[in-house]
Length: 69
Length: 272
Image (cartoon, helix red, strand yellow):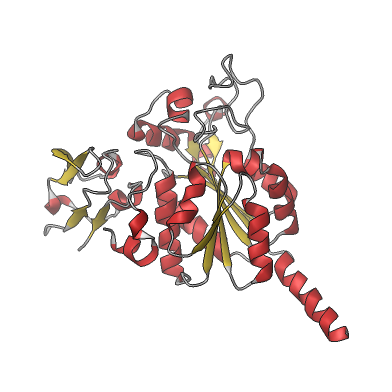
């Protein structure tokens, strides 16, 4: 699939990993980057696997992830 | 910053002050989606009492009231009666709503006044450090039930039904689409609409009762134990033990209090 653009807001993410849990396609992985609040945040590892189901958005308790395309 | 947040929330207040993995943020998101999809931002006002979930009310770019513990419903009734055009959304917790606020809850439901009451249930008093609540399961060991809670948990949906609420749903933050749908319907429902949202609390009930502070494990716990009637029907009676029903339980139309109050006022004015 063409790569989906997914934005992760490093200032809002608290590293809870619910986006990783909810994604059925393995698009996201945890990164070694810390966000503004000091939590390790995820990164978009395989954007071409994204089916734009929006589970990551709907399960994020901080509205820190948005599927853009 | 999420585009929906920019349209509907007080973005200067972000990030949410909730713990990582707390269900409160899911309710902010789904309410934001409901307000956005219904196009009612200019008509909504929110109220919060005291407790973590009451802060949900403060994140929307609308007028809101933050009131003493358990007293969101009397204030909400005042807002509705003084201007029935307002869409009044109350955000409350299980302690704020059925413990200290229980009596107001009974009577607001009984009047069937047009409010949407969204009660987050984390089965504990979270903000104050994890004390036992009416909704805490029997046997649970908390800060104030060190030998295990004696009495069984309170079902707020049953209380709402008995008191006279005309819209009742229960979902969890692990059912976000169903929750969004219930919130939209509750806002549009012309009467007392009650949505119970079972919500994980990594800091308190997760740690003390479910045995985990891991947001992922708590979502999995909710998905296992809070199931629809269709899922219940597939289980044996033994398997149903300890599981709770979620779903849209009631949507009925009965005379609504604010409308009838204003009809009475208008009639009395005409007769004068």
